[in-house]
Length: 479
Image 1 (tube, rainbow, N blue to C red):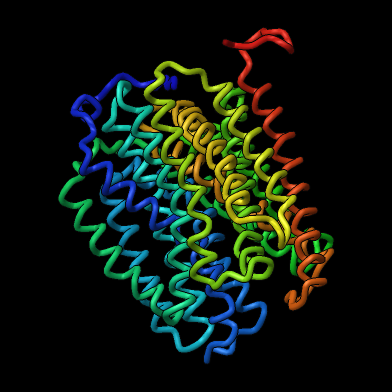
Image 2: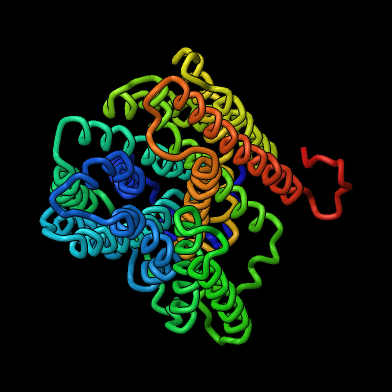
């Protein structure tokens, strides 16, 4: 796998990345990403809880974390670059624990939702800080392996969230999930403090308050519009207003960045075709994964009759390709990004098409094979896409690069849920209780997943084109 850092190696890079440090950082990534998915399996418990959540409040309980997380990622990355990544990571873990405790102690909807938002702010500090530390410590020789491990942890976080959420939903109260996060965050903070060295901060790094406000507002508005699309309708005033606000703020951020003396980051970096392809590819990979996550638990419970806990565990085959394939890619050595990114996304699209054929009669081992194909595709493309985005910015802006990478991931994930959720809601409503309703549900699920698969395959073609060599013919390969 090729990575081309743009800055010379610093002393921190030359020191190498210890295994204990990488394990601690990857554990932080896994926990932060896991909280995106875990709450979804607790929706029935929350709906029936003594908090008496309305439909809107239940939606915000789920989405507050994602919206705040995605909106703050790029400024949070800049904060780490300016004042130190280790400090930003420890602060993020502190916010994460405080938010979890607030949600666990909630006696009303407002405290529950606020706690989720504070958790999301903590995650926004955690994700860029962990990747930028990895980039600074690994050096050119170890960066491919280290980024593969980081990306694996982010992917496994969604799976871990499904498993843990399922087990909590089956055997414990919803409050247990939040209480579990408090000592876990404390343990991770202790591990980081002990194992992770401080990397050189860049006091001259631009924080750019105006640019930070504009990009935060733009991401908040776009993600809010995506999440509100399915329940409110894509043509509702709220959704159209959110998208319009996001577009205006993004245009203002771009115009400001082109003129500012020290912008948060220079919009001209997107002149790089590979950066555009890498950002699109990362969003697409998680679009496909979260489209699957949205319907997987419902399919396994409604069509296959699995309990919540078993449904959470039944997605484990998705881990196989994510764990094994990146190691094989790194061992293979100097592989090009283009076939890894384009081919991996194509496999994700193919896996979604296969899952779309599943119904109540589909044997679980066959379904597990479909999940395995998806995991192989993710294992192929995600490390290459991450390396592309990170390598497109100088090493002293590693936090910004990580924030951009993770923002693309979260926007893609929100879109995946929104697209499949919209198609499913248009063709089926309620809870399937008999064979006829189950068949109607699996048919609607199949339509939603085929829609998602088509979009993934189209994006895979665009990513393949984006990685072409400058001046190459349309059919030429860089290999």
